[in-house]
Amino acid sequence: MAFRTRQPRCLLRRMILPPQTPSLPYVGSGVAQRRQIATRARDAAEQMMRRFANHVTVRRQVLDGNQLQKLSLTLGRPHLHPGLDVTESPPPDGTPLPPGYHLVYFTPGGLESELGSDGTDMAFNAPAPFTRRMWAGGRMTWKTPAQLLVGAQAEERTRLLSATPKKSRNGGEMVLVEVEKELWGPDGLALVDQRSWIFRPEVPAAHASATWSVQDTTVRGPSTVEDVDAGYGYPYRRLRWSPVGLFRFSALTFNGHKIHYDGSWTRDVENHPGCVVHGPLNLISMLDYWRDVCGENPVGGIRYRAIAPIYAGEMYQISAQDPIESADEKSWDILVQKGDEFCMKGTITTPSIAI
Image (cartoon, rainbow, N blue to C red; front, top):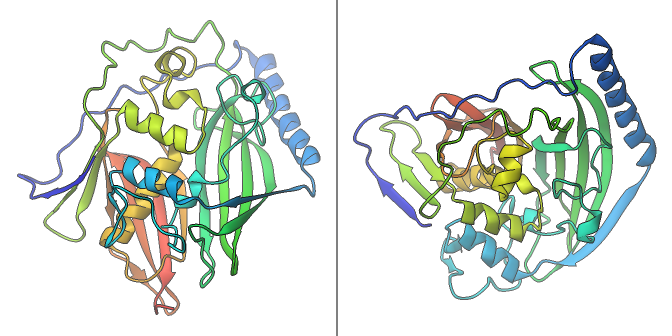
């Protein structure tokens, strides 16, 4: 996968969208059962808050250049930074990590037998029946001048911020879990990474595998990314991820979540039409796009929210709106969409005056 730039033959084309997921009852039907699952959502959230009260997990790791090289190549970027080609060899010690690339470090550990039924790390998973995890959003704040550097030892401090019972747009019960990770480098606190996941109840077997009619789920060809001149403002970036690309990202992040590589699980259990593009992968792609076409100063922070899934083989795009500038900072709205459907939205901020 390599970058290409071309002039469009016309303005943005409408892309064909996949069928919408039908609404599924989470447990049978009836008022009593809906009340039961709502009570269990409250109990699950309270149980998590009690379990992780005042608990901080500390891990230390050397930021290996080989891991960074493999991520950059998986993203189709032979140059990690301008002028730094990592095609044949990893970046040297002292190289700063690009924004978001820390996601391939401090990956989940443990035995396979300790994972959830969907392959997810259970460290901050909600208790059953809320076993279907999706990345919901979060925010990151970079603490200049401290940096995360290749070859340096870093420390990650993780704590649970909150666990809250919520309702989805179709009225289903779920648990919203928010975690904060502080990453410390040789010069002190470098990054605060707050992540949000939603946990929905498992799909009853009676409803699994009968909700999609997929004629052909084969995705051929490699992942692609190209920048297209829209004729005004910033160019937009068009992406398409293959199952191979998704698998490589799962391997780099040691993410066993089956929705990203196991087609039968994705369709028959999770009720998706195909393998799901990782939320963190889209987040890194948003940050890469910004630093390529918008970035003037070092990034200060990003707030982002996942709205709708993107699947392997689907073409989608990333675009930016003109920045809003105040006395203290500039902010860009970054949009991820397929056709007219927004899949992720983010706001990137940076100081108005470079530090």
